[in-house]
Structure formats: structure tokens, C-alpha cells
Amino acid sequence: MLGDDVVLEEFSYGAVAVAQRLRELAPELLVLVGAKKRGRVPGTVRRRNGYTSTLRPEEIQAAVADAVTGHIDLDLVLEVAHGLGALPERVVAVEIEPASTEPSEQLSPEVEAALPKALELVRAELHNS
Image (cartoon, rainbow, N blue to C red; front, side, top):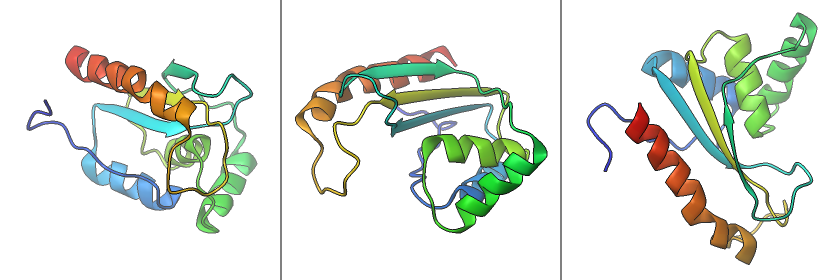
């Protein structure tokens, strides 16, 4: 169950706006959940702890430019929020490998089957925070 100090937000809008919202919220912990194609078996769930940027200033500027055009991506959100100084000290990403990145109103069977594991990871993060 979500406590009073937990905020659940849907961040499928631009990364710059997400960074602005994170600055407003100033969370101690950010848990992002999303699908990210990384070449794994569809439905694979992966937890990434922390965020360390290796981007040079010009790459951060390029990430912000991508975000302004409406490009949406889990990594882009992290890059832009980091570049704008909006990431909290503790960041966790729970990623599910998609079967497809084509627009759809339904999840693939692989991703649907992976949701319980992803939710378990999110619950564990909230419980341990």
C-alpha cells in the first residue's frame, strides 16, 4: 500500500517537464518503471540501481534538445533530469524488455507475464525505503 509520503506519477510526457516535476517533488528516492529495448529476451525484468552519467556537457545539451522535440525514452528521462540537476540521490529503474516497440493498446503476452515480477521489485524498493 502506498503511504502518505509516496507519490505515484505517470511520466510519459517530455523529459524536461519530468525534470521540472522532480524538482518540485524533490523525492529522496525515484523508482522509474518502463519498457526499454536492450536486446534481451522479451519479458525480461531488470532492476538498475543508481544512475551515473558519463555524458559530456554537449551530450547533455543534445539530450535536452531530443527531449524538447517530444522524444520519450527511459534513458533520456534520466539523462535530462541528471543534466538539469533534478535527480535524487537514490534512483532505481525497473525495466521490462518489450516484445515490440510499435504503438499498441495492449501489452504483449511476454510483458503481461512480466508485470508481477516488476511490481514485486517496485514494492520491495518502497518497503526498503
